[in-house]
Amino acid sequence: MRHSLCQAEQVCVEWYKVIEDGMLWKRLIEKKVQTDPVWKGLSERRGWGEYLFRHMPSSDPPSVSYRELYPSIKRDIKVMEENWRKGAYTLTRIECHSENSKGVYCLQYDEQKIVSGLRDNTIKIWNRKTQECERILQGHTGSVLCLQYDERVIITGSSDSTIRVWDIHTGNMLNTLVHHCEAVLHLRFNAVTMVTCSKDRTIAVWDMKTASDIVLRRVLVGHRAAVNVVDFDDRYIVSASGDRTIKIWRTSTSEFVRTLHGHRRGIACLQYRGNLVVSGSSDNTIRIWDIECGACLRLLEGHDELVRCIRFDNKRIVSGAYDGTIKIWDLQAALNHRSPADSLCLNTLSQHTGRVFRLQFDDFQIVSSSHDDTILVWDFLKPESPTATSMDTVPPQPQASSRVRSPSSPAGWDSST
Image (cartoon, rainbow, N blue to C red; front, side, top):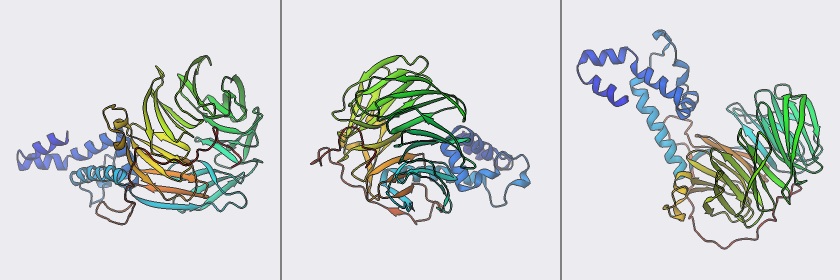
């Protein structure tokens, strides 16, 4: 459509004026914002989104030329993608100041806040703009190992074996669920279902009606060691364990489907999305799986210690490990069997000084936490104008396909360390 508008502008002066004055460029940008999450995110981060979807021309600032804004947005996106590949970013560091045991085990974020679970038994909520701690939630008697929140509640799991539900607005504790007999290592929930897993080797499936009405539906057994992570959607529940296996269950019936074998040591993390499962292990490797047939599609090597956290989208995989590094991998290249192994890791980020425990990312940033008691925000979109130069640049490190490996951590991570 952009090419057609440019051609139409060249027909004559009158056509150029009609296109410019008629705000067709604005409508093109609005369409992109409605259909492309990167454009939507840029509109919020750069501030020009507030002038879209208004019908009164007087509501537009006098300095805005939508014809010039369109290629500027395209340049922003191109620069950002190059920054991901080059390892160019702006780094924000949040010191968590734990009083006793140091370490940030889990986190989730949005544009306003970061919610973190700490080894010192607390949940801390951080303001994204000020990097200040706005609220501390207390109630667990053990380390907070996992959490998730939505617009209503924060749900946390702990080494004290309990699951607690908190009001996200007030911080009040709304519910405590006691079922697992050992540490709750991971949890996921949606509007009606929650799945939790534990060092006690079981998976619990819960029916959620309200924050105070959460009822155990089913317990899934089959793993022979701690169940370190779960993920699910309407089709499948996927679990991974220190027993070196990934198991798949039907969400609707809890029927067991299959076991995925391949990792040589315990599995510490995974994500399930679409038809893919990506897992990380204490054998220091990452595997990509087809969930429908159970085949391992690719093995990724590069970390020197246990791969503790992993996330992926349709472009890239981001992994964090006990070697203190975060690696960015090209997912599409990894799914192409012709891509050489040494081309798959795009970059290695090395700013944490301790084990990387958890990370999440989107098109613009990575947010990670570590045993070093910090949360780091790696922003790949320059906060200034596209011509600004104030960003930290970390040169890519050599990506060797084989390395001298340090001793691996034991299968199934120990929640007490």
